[in-house]
Image (cartoon, rainbow, N blue to C red; front, side, top):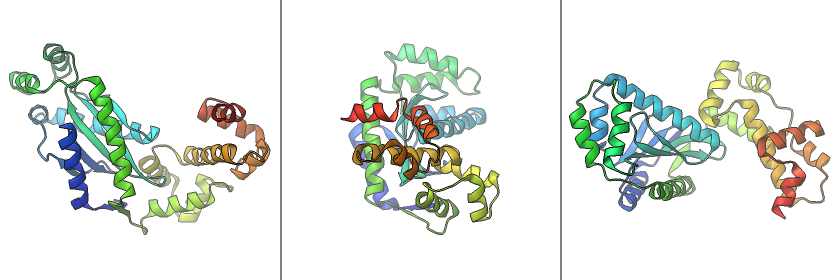
Length: 279
């Protein structure tokens, strides 16, 4: 674990979210370990599902997959879980470093209980659980609209920002991922590669790749490219006197044409179009 959460402040924040939305909210660290939740008890529906070891494992894998997707897009990610419930995940970042996740669920988002039950029954047919109890728990779930979930996910994202802004979490500066992130942040415009980082920190490429996957959601090379493109965006908007060639060089791209290609691949538009869109 690369960070420490202030659980007293964190629990108060989670309680506020639950009072406002009536939806259960949970905090995971970067390794998908649950740190806190409100309320602590999971819904009866999920208790029944998790009686089956196969279903319990599916719950964990489903959450992990969604966490990785949220980390990759760096914003709230809404999805339907393996058992048919709707959930939302917001990644928690301190600077560029992924330190955990906020998750809310398990929301019943169907037009009717009958429609939802038919789909859930199909999804859970292989699990060794009491289907009648599951049906009863399903029909006891309140129906939550898509618009409500969208609004709740926006609040979840705001809570994620607030949590980090109010310093409810602190980084362990001695931890290797923190040191690597600080090094990358200081040198990403220079000649930087996975091989150089491995040499600098005396670690293997496999170890470095795992650190990158857990903390950035992407590989080291892609993370460095993303940092360079973000810097390029800032220069394009705030340093109009610079030529594209100068911006390319200042962001660590030694090849002007390669910079144009990467910018277009990352943003979907050319640097000139990016400027025009923001004028």
